[in-house]
Length: 134
Image (cartoon, rainbow, N blue to C red; front, side, top):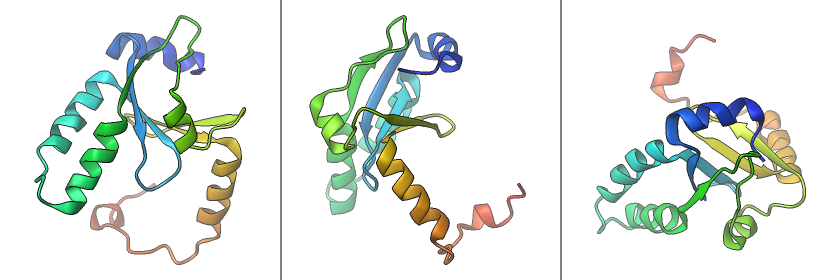
């Protein structure tokens, strides 16, 4: 169930029409307002289909994309393949990520958070982030 604070805004921007697909790097689901997804889908489809990495992304993201509608109570129906991919149990966590949401199993989310917080290496910071002030 979507929190009430998001429902009204979703009605405004996409008439409660969402698209859910998998995250190709983590066991979670990505939830997009329909209008946002259409823009992303167009970009994914324009990737070169002879490039193996691009083809993998096309197959996974577009292949799992599922249209859903949020009902008046903020509920949406998830297919079994999506639920299984994200290992969703009884308790889930919905994370706002700007123009999309991520849906995680509560236990998996907790484990990933611990891993990310414990990772002091930081990795290579993208140039655009290097100048960001928080």
